[in-house]
Image (cartoon, rainbow, N blue to C red; front, top):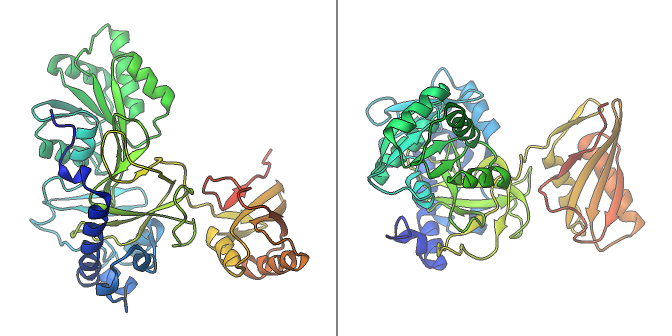
Length: 415
């Protein structure tokens, strides 16, 4: 049986990159003309010139909170805040909601959210029955998985959430090939089945998402005969990356352009450094260009041992929004980046907030090869100018700061 969903997965990396970059100018132009929001965000941009990652990196990043703010401000004229290229009607069969509330359209294209690839990577094959326990109301998760399963050629049982005993009964009687849903709910189902004395011998694989999937839980499933794999997807973008049998990071989907940027900025970081995932989707119905997910990750070196040639990421490594309040004032990662940019000698910077409640202290740690006292003084002045707060400066050798994507570390005691 073929080990790959399609030939796209094993393309020469240079051919893939060329194809993505060839599609990029058209998608940027489409966003400018079909999405009123991006008509403003990308005003003055020559779409035909966006033919490289360097050119893409010059475009502004639109983050989830900005999308929400635009939606809230434009509810009277457009519930989607001008981001959707679709209108209500036959071209948009469903609308979903994410916390906030952010509304997302679903188009009519086959496998609209591109989930079939992740299911194939998890071992699902045409002709199988899948037990789908993602929610079918408000959020798009249930539909994301169902449309992907149908594109793969699978039948779906719409299990949804809750009713654990009924979930066990349905699995025992329908004998699905596997489960799709959150890992924690699958654990509840397996435990309930054991409590009821019901065997679920056909459930041997699972595609899980929506929560962390630690190795301990993965191994717990393996001990019970279930091979669980995770995927990373969002309601805005669809599939971004998926796990394979190699279990070495997550392979990027073929329909997205992914960048890792320094939190609070749009500046790409070197390969291997942790930063915020920024995604440009090639979906014409919801053409998000440089959409900041707010999630931290990093690119892994090399390619997947399974033979898939796309880049891999480590998976979800935390949140990029590290905004914190110091002495009654908000300090943002973007302010730390602003300070660092003023000094070419600064390679990386990290702001550590310490002390106890009402006695906050700020220490800006900077990686640099220069230790002149004048630089520390200038950095201190910049801290005060940018944040309106006083802070100390500590200069450390290159490579000293943790590679965890954190620009602001809150080390205060709240006892």
